[in-house]
Image (cartoon, rainbow, N blue to C red; front, side):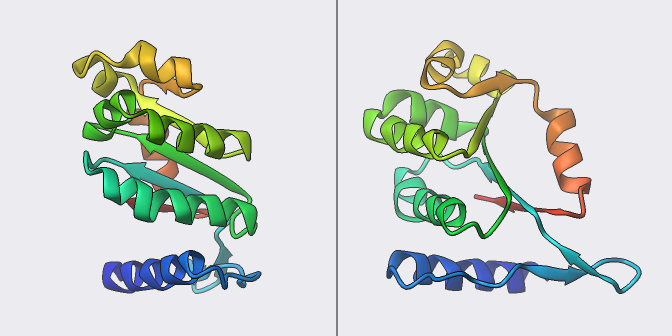
Length: 150
């Protein structure tokens, strides 16, 4: 199943980057009882400290997913090394502000931001910095949300 999700994401990213993304159909997956479940929300857990992952993949996909209304609500969670990277890179901060401006919810793990001493830096960008263990667990268990990890 993970291989299918990754392949699907790569196809969507290629479509979005090439500017040919129209109104794609809603993502529907069978639930445990075999009924179709419409994925209404997307949660992206951004963990990597590699700039290109955000600038060349995550940003463009999340931006297009919101603009094209592929999901009703989108949350991007800054977790681990991505917190430090974001706090130190003004270009990426502007890209994140762009996402916030179009309605993407930005959250960050306070334990992670404290470890890197960047809590106040991320709050200043407009990111909701808080304990993320319980919220992330709820996102994962929510059958109407798709969770992607980078």
